[in-house]
Image (cartoon, rainbow, N blue to C red; front, top):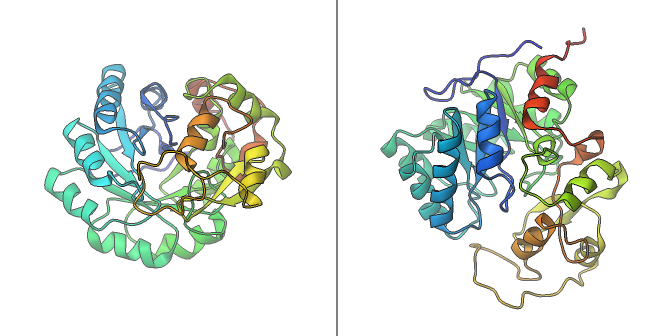
Length: 314
């Protein structure tokens, strides 16, 4: 496969592949460092974890790689600014943020000389990001994993935005296979962000039960829900997802207001943590719509090898 050159500030990864920051506690030091060691950009998910824990994860990851490491912090998190500054002070190479939009992060990025890469889902936000000093943007469609900013799929959204900004544009959403990656590069984008394929990796910090779900879930078993954050998300259909869809999910027993805004109809943080541990009864399993394309769990190295060895189709 022929790779474009991705330049984010002064950072130039060997391969223009960013590993999606999958909260909660899925994209941690082991996964991020493994991606960085293969020449991509490894990303630690810094949402809904204590400030000291993100410091420790960054320190651990930096001890495991000399590659490029980023952190993804969801703007909706109440501790957003503290987590952002703690990450920078811990030596992170770049900041990625979505699930809301922060103007302050650009000011902080400039102050500390750390590139900021917002996740956008509209032309308006893409242009605002460029004006405020974004080093690059991730254009993410509604077929991606995690909390989403749009119902529109990645490809048509990318077509609307990519030629309207002069900073590097990175595609995200249903980019799972080497062919998916190649298709994005053929559109002229500078890079890809992949979450779902790395979710189904040996280094992902999830229970074996979750990994087994990744390889057996069918296309029709991936559904869209409305998270208590107030944003849509794709998830594997389970008993708890049916409760959410039918408005019968239990309200939080103990709420520490981890989010700036939350309906408090149910606790998405606790449900995601239970999903990470493989709880099929009370867990929520976020994923991108392209999960059904995966039929085996691979190491990060094997994932990169498949992409590098793919022969582009004319």
